[in-house]
Image (cartoon, rainbow, N blue to C red; front, side, top):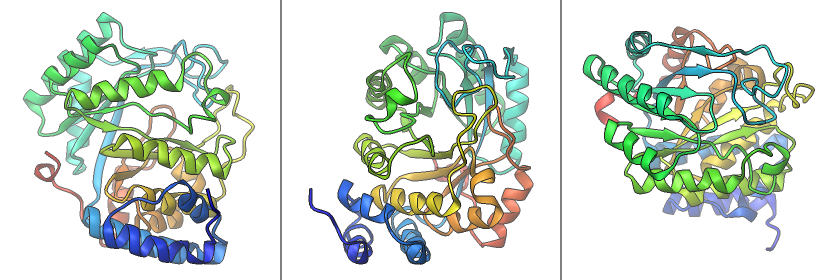
Length: 336
């Protein structure tokens, strides 16, 4: 693999990505991640052009809620929902009427997607049945697409969720394949990839991203972008590590804002036609100004309100920000 001079990688991207809609390869993505700080604005401007040409100007808004919080048997080192760490998150369940009400409140923000999440390695029969009931109840009362994220699935479980009407399934690879054993040891990267393969074959949209700032190298960050591109996902959530008390990663420093913005631009150039969603940690890593730069630098979707175990911002603040920078919110019928 030949090294690519950072001076010309944006010209390569302008022709290849903007012109032809083809994503950058590993070497090219790495060169973008290595750009000097004084070229970040140029990168973000190009990434925004790519986003406008290949995705349109609309921003997709999503709300998420946890069906089951805490007590997970896995050891994902960034996550306070693991039952193996001394973190403050403890078990809690939501009932079906509460989920329907949360979907209604999410829909009022203009969101087109409502994602139900559970902190589990994979669903047991009780959880899967509850999820099927929740999807049906929401669809009967709320005009919103329902997504789900309940861990590693067997084929029969994939089929049941597809039949229930789950629109999009979120299952993050979390990090590059080569870095995964440093982040999770209780299951494999391949376990996650197999679930994503079955989800795609069942006709559900694939939502798969991860977290940046978990000790990966720039080479691994570029590798991760290529891992994701190979999946051809509908959506890639971009999270930035928000170190959680009681987890193995609690002492890590948040990713510097410039590094986060470089990653946003690089991932857009590697994934020109994918929904790239701001997710957890953006408030800590980027603040308001950085979030605006991201939305004008390749991001075209946001999660509004709180995340699973960390506070976000009031939905109104994000919607005001979209208005300020004159980005329209995607209507529901445009996502179906």
